[in-house]
Length: 106
Image (cartoon, rainbow, N blue to C red):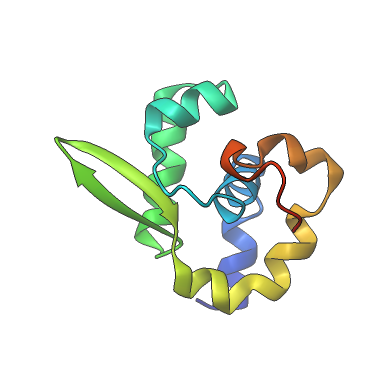
């Protein structure tokens, strides 16, 4: 992914929140329903952002009985970690960290 595409994708606040959530996640098992509850927005809004991030290779997923479980693509994480860490270290984003990693330092 080019830097301009990275910047464009994460110019949307919801996707920055997703980035903070998925970057800090160790359990790798979040569904759209889980994310609706966590982020307090509609299923359609969550799905729209997930689909874009999935299409760009930012998120990976597995399916079980028509339910998708999402996590941050490891290759994306390794390539862009030097930019991701400073962004998600912002105090305002800590409320969006995954609950499976509450004791984890970024």
